[in-house]
Amino acid sequence: MSRRLAAALFLLLASAAPVAAQINPFGRIGATFTDEDIALARAAIDELRGEAVPVGAERGWDNPKSGNSGRLKYVGSATIDGLPCRKIVHQVRLARQSDPKYSTLITCKTADGSWRNAF
Picture 1 (tube, one colour):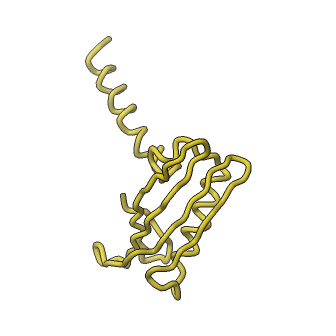
Picture 2 (tube, one colour):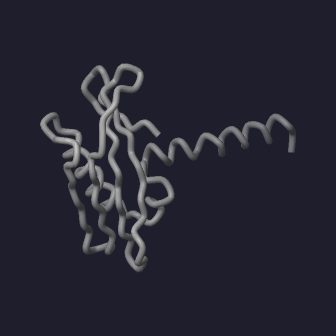
């Protein structure tokens, strides 16, 4: 295999992880999520992005089909690169696993009003 081809394959594979993270922002925890789980979790996150939502607010989601569920808590806010951001802790209970998993999401409101996740 030529060095150029090997380098191109390396770059292609290395760039796949960030793309997968954009599709499923829950990292390794999300490896066992169904599309429906992701939609339910994103809907709960969207609720916590509301203008009048106070720090400490919580939202939950549950998918009886997959057996997965989660609880999200808005734990704080900050300004990052001039953008208002929220820190959300996500507790996930995966089917057939007794211990919950945790992840932290930093989500920021852009100038056009949309929200972007900052990992």
